[in-house]
Length: 183
Image (cartoon, rainbow, N blue to C red; front, side, top):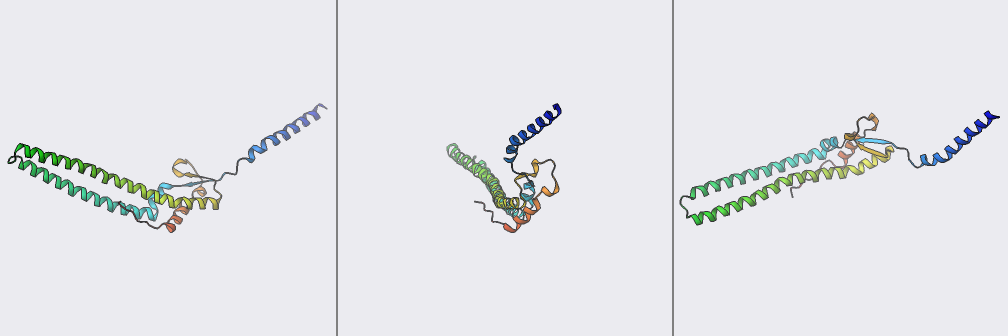
């Protein structure tokens, strides 16, 4: 009798635990994880490679403008120093102040031009990422992926979890290139 009561108790306990715990399991969907290497896509996609070339050309142009302006300011400074001997002190002081204001304004402009390169890089990166997002969503839906992680944050993953190449091919079809503007 005692043994029979023990089995009934275990059976009832198992039944109750199943009733109370099964709703908790039902709240969580099956989780499929995917991995994508965004750095690889941002450096190897056709659009990113083309944008990098355009940005390099823009940077060279800005660098050349800065170099030319630097040289003209140095030349102007040398002329000002040479003219110091023959100018009245008041007139020289006025010319010196004008030159210093010109240099200050130029330094601001120069800094803005250099920062514009960073802005262009950021805008280009966002252009690629914005085009990539719907592609990643489509691949995730097709493969039933519920969580997509960036490869840099994953220590170890199975080969079939990585969708980078598939995403890169789709991105190259959707966005082979785009125009990078300096403004």
